[in-house]
Length: 614
Ligand code: ADP
Ligand code: ZN
Image 1 (cartoon, helix red, strand yellow):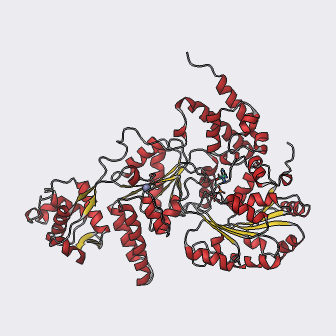
Image 2 (cartoon, helix red, strand yellow; image 1 turned 90 degrees about the vertical axis):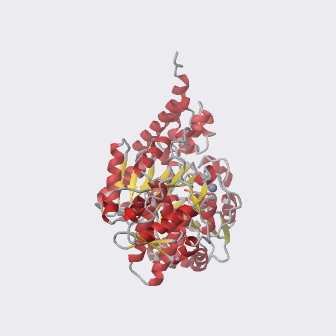
Image 3 (cartoon, protein in one colour; image 1 turned 90 degrees about the horizontal axis):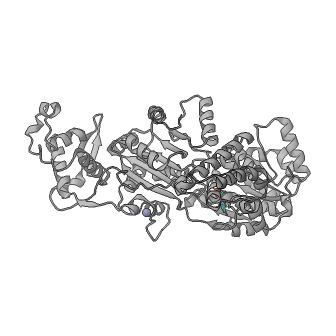
């Protein structure tokens, strides 16, 4: 295999095309790259999947010398370096996992000017030995990835990051770029200040993730709902299913396996070795579903996660945004599905109340939970609400969330709410939702009879709604603060807020349940990548995926390091038959063409030659 000599390709546009195989820059990429190429500093705020890496990888190739990338997670470093090497870039990383002789080889290459990009953890960089080494070579730039790690308020604080301002003092002529996907404003200010980047050019992108479809549905039979979602829309796709408890993680994974899916559990209680193995399989194999607690996700840079499904309510909008954000880093259509119900509202409310910490802390947790519930219950565009939460105004409804796609119906729930509240009152404000609903619907079950509740005035006055519909009413009244859930038996109790409603001075609009559970939609909405494939091309698509998997296994890398889904889809559409035609497909650069081109062309040619079924 011939050596690539990328430093001869000095023009960013050329590098974009030949090394990375893309035809155009995205968003602010070009402006960021120009800033660095001309020797100035940059601070880049871009959502996950926005394309931050190219912002420093291209200038590092365009400028003379080696670019140093500071990254907090060893796993991610290895990922990036593998992907760069596959594209023919001379990249390496130094960290404590490497044997001494490999470290020496890399240092030698560095001193001989044979590296274009070097990845380091901050603690490694700050060692006197490393800093000394860097003074002896030509440097093209410093890139500080995950720059929010300097923020002491953030969740990923790394003390070493605070010392990174020394780069500015020791290497005043080397341009620096700091990058983060953190949306909140306070953190931005801190990054600029702590890293001495106030003079830098700031590039702030929208935090919207337009390729993620947000869907929040009421939980009625969560397993059936999940199954339908997976079967209708996500066949063969990789995804994450989040659950709150370890036990639920385990039995959900087991059940998914019984249903024929390739599902693996992941939570902090599993042996470290098993966790590492499950994470490895998620990265390396096609179509693996990980069922996990929130312990899973940090440091997972897999670009082709096609869905994130929550079977329990996240604790805050921040958590929801971060967890759903793990879908679709590659910019391809992805889905975030959340199923939630009354039991989540009750459980999380109780967890907040019982949590350690001051009253103030509990109040804040309660507020965060309420904001999350607000997002679940709104009848307008979810994306607008989500972005507004992060102080970003989006003028138009998005057209790609459940409320935009199937606007929820509302109904005048005043009478139903009044019946429910009265029934809670008549039964003594200590019974849980299902008992109150039994009374309203005139059930003759044992518990109703035992407490003589068939004799209260509200007995049987609510037969017009199903038990499920009543549950929806209870949930919405709890979320809006008319009812509280209390104690071990989760008894419902009225709050002060009920008075105007009970006196008939207030009316209330409630969200209708969707006509039937999702999936009775007839034409199912198929958003997966595979769904964009013409059925006639399905065999070709599968053959290309098989070819990719084979090459990935041969090279010991994850499939997406060979080519992303978008690139395979480009091949299906264009059906290239020659190397030049293949090069025109987005994501195919010179080096990948040389290394993998023939294998894919063989598959493509065979599929063209295949005789048509008589
Ligand atoms: P981030 O680090 O911001 O999460 P990445 O740098 O990993 O995002 O890029 C996300 C995806 O977008 C990657 O698959 C990358 O190859 C792709 N990408 C980035 N820039 C471009 C571009 N200009 N054209 C096409 N694809 C791009
Ligand atoms: Zn919308």
